[in-house]
Amino acid sequence: MTGGSTTGDDGSAAPAPAAPEKRQPWPLWEVFVRSSRGLSHVHAGSLHAPDAEMAVRNARDLYTRRNEGVSLWVVPASSIITSDPDAKGQFFESPQGKDYRHATYYTKSDGVKHL
Amino acid sequence: MSESNASATRITPGNALRPEDIAAADLRPSADVAEYALRLGDDSLILSQRLGWWISRAPELEEDVALGNIALDLIGHARSFLSYAGHGLDKTEDDLAYFRREPEFRCAHLFVQPNGDFARTIARQLVVSHYQFELYSRLMHSTDATLAAIAAKAVKEVDYHRDHSSQWVLRLALGTDESRRRMIAGLKLTWPYVEELFVDDQLIDTLGEAAVRPSTLRAPFDSLISALFAEADLDIPAVPGAVGGGRAGKHSEHLGYLLAEMQVLAREHPGATW
Image (cartoon, rainbow over all chains, first blue to last red; front, side, top):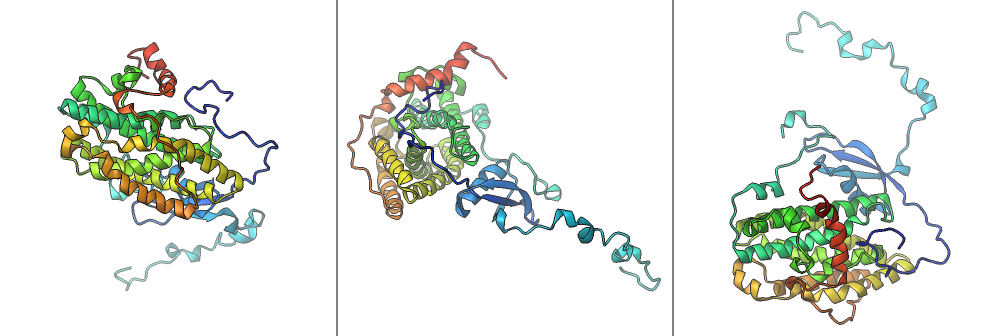
């Protein structure tokens, strides 16, 4: 033990392996939290975990410590297919100027009482 | 909480029993109940101090937080029990945590055992969480309303601690050769201190239905551990029991060092607030 703490490791731990192990980092998971009201799950962040069961437990520890939710989803980050940030133009700019896709574009006919 | 302004990031404190409520309440526990509350409070306080060491040292950041959360849950239980004991001893929770000497602590030996490596800490967590779960799930029916209320709050948290330790036992035991070797070694170092948890004594006889008889927890504890060990392909370590005496203030060399670190600030600056 190298630290100054007296309450931790007493040196009885197993000796470190001779050669430093080449450790695979834990995979990344995306976390979705649903708050107590009947809302959708909302993306809250990400975390590392060795497997799915531990991922949902880590999510509980990292993202619901302050009463934020009643339900959790975790999804392997590698399973999420994202839109291409370089394709913003072709993906997202087309609706601009197409006001007729919004209900507010239309005026209500006089004969319609309840709309 | 108002439903109308709920959101995914809504933060609420909840309305569970808090240590401050116990400290502020007008409670008069008998000397025996106070002594019993000291035992339960000291177990959690000392283990919490041990677990705090892992912050920044666990295998991954996520596990730092998991162990930190468990330590904070335990501090919460300790504060409630010590606040309650304090009503009977005319002391505050801080008086009891920071200004008692080694022989005045009532924790069992298991709780002060060194962290060792991660597997040894998990072995200790396994025993503690299963023991405390069995204890609190019965103490919540205590004839002492305050003990029952503290236990009812604690049992849900300890249930999660039980899950955390079980999951790690399975992963370490069924993981690599190295993780399995370490898990077995950790259990072997932990098991001598199991027996003390289940010993009855005169205080327990005196308290009757207010307390839980430790010996009655042994069978359910063994059955849960056996089921987990069967799944993890582990054997109960065949090791002799260590000398007990923690409940009577007889401690090993470990407690003095732990208390020195835990108490130094409060003793150096008595009454300081921040």
